[in-house]
Length: 116
Image (cartoon, rainbow, N blue to C red; front, side, top):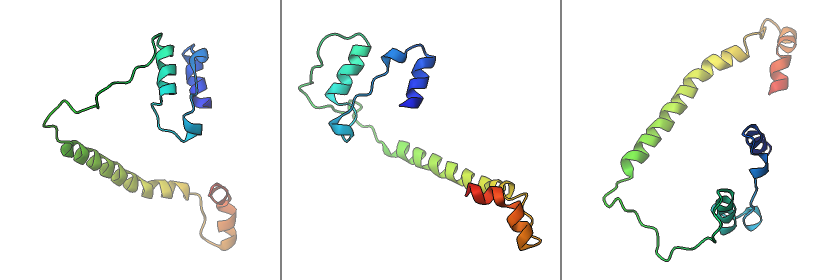
């Protein structure tokens, strides 16, 4: 909430921030209470009305598999990039460590040990 408060403050909208809790914090997003608060913040005065019909996909022959495959491949590529960078980051992290003796190791790795 603090991060959101800072963002709203920077936008000169600090008074617009609301936290709407659904089912004691265990509910799903998009509760009637939350949607009503959102619509009120947009200036909509009339009450929220439920649709009588179920939502349905109007795209007909849409196949989600190619999109899911692309998303999965992007996650794999991102993970592989992190793995490649980790060797360099680890070397940078331990760069000042002196392995000449146990005493020197203890002296030169205090910062790393405190971090971990």
